[in-house]
Image 1 (cartoon, one colour):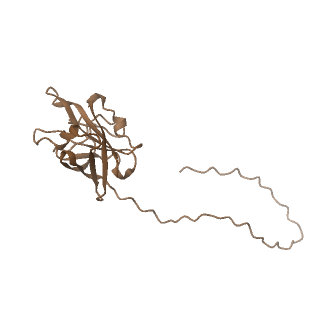
Image 2 (cartoon, one colour):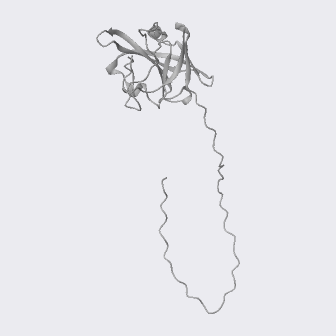
Length: 212
């Protein structure tokens, strides 16, 4: 099972200062001194202008909250999640073990409040048993998916759709969106196995929306 490319030439989950202009300079005129001294004028106060004071103390840096586990009670799936990047081929990295999922670390975290958190895993592998994501296709709409983040926060999602996409037709820009309605996207392989390529023909894509 292969996968994707990076921002946002993402390859299908084949799962196999600005400066402020200065105002124009004013004309300069030379004053002719007078022979007699003038009394010194009494300085007058200028009008007060309220100036907001901004603290120079840096704001707190938000703690990273990458997903670390996906639990799907309806299919008894409890899957550890690790951050993954992009292979030299332009495909998204995936853990070799189908029992471990990869979170696309160039995307968004569950706590981002927008965009899609993308997590993917192999369906199987010659060296490992069939993985938990093989049962994604069996989930009913409304099923709960719980995602735990590194801070221990748990976000619960409800399954909205499960779709089979031929790999060449996977809507990458849509599924890997970093803005828009927050969602969870789980991806694995499915459909017929193509012995000539050693890959499944489709990707199974589950989309879920946060409910807590």
